[in-house]
Every structure is written in structure tokens, then in C-alpha cells.
Length: 95
Image (cartoon, rainbow, N blue to C red):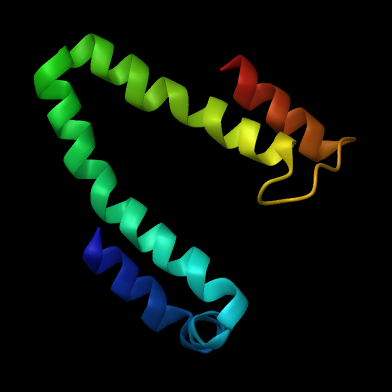
């Protein structure tokens, strides 16, 4: 995961620099980096504790629900509902 992030940063160097230098985005950047670091650790620990079947249902099945809820709730993005955004959120909630 680290190598992929480095490659993406190098390929999009101008855009990457703009994102890192934007103080409004920096908090989200740090939170995303922490989440990307913590997720695999908790995912595999959950698999060891709960078992493969239940761990997959919880870890992988809950992701689209949480993402759709955050989007619909307007905490990260305003909730425009109509057309493509509404269809995408509906699919995420139904999957």
C-alpha cells in the first residue's frame, strides 16, 4: 500500500503538491493516512478474533453502508440527490 501511494504521488506530482499545501485539505489528508494505516491492522485482527466469514461481513459489508451514510448525511459532501449521486448512494446502501 505504501508503494502504491508513493507511485501515485509521483505520477500526479503537481496535483499532489497542491493537495498537501492546501491547509483545508491537510486534516483530511492526515485522517486518511491514519485510516489507511490502521485499517489493515484492525481488519486482520478482526479476522483472527471473529472468524473469516463474520469478519468479512462486518469489515467489507459495512464499508458501503458507512460511506453512503456519510455522503447522505452531508458530513463530508453536501447531499445532492438526483441523477448519478442518488443512484450511487442507493446502490451502496443496497449492496
